[in-house]
Image (cartoon, rainbow, N blue to C red):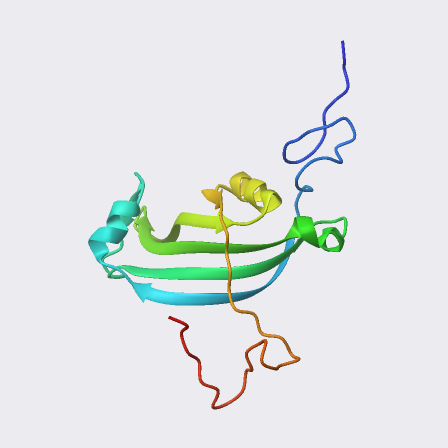
Length: 158
């Protein structure tokens, strides 16, 4: 009978604890992001709310769509493993009330990385795997990338 104690913060747990998807907290984050504020039909927002949350009449359907390009690290310099700890994320936040207090509720959240998925589940987010993209800015500009400067025109492709 194997009596080894399994270690780790997220599954998979192993005797040495080195196969866990994420290290234990504290966690540190750095990112580039885009936040798009918008208003939806209040009835559509209300249809997304679980029991215990109520629509916030003062918000009038206020929401945010957020695109993040994350770098994550714990206590062990996880940033040195970019394939595992860099990821992109998209989520929606809707305004609501919990026991009469204003809150933001997350009905949808997508990530492109297993470690981020597991960490989000640990934190109570309804994360799902998906492909997330946003245009990046690079300091070395040219025809391959956008320039951030006064007077630059931003156009949609389609």
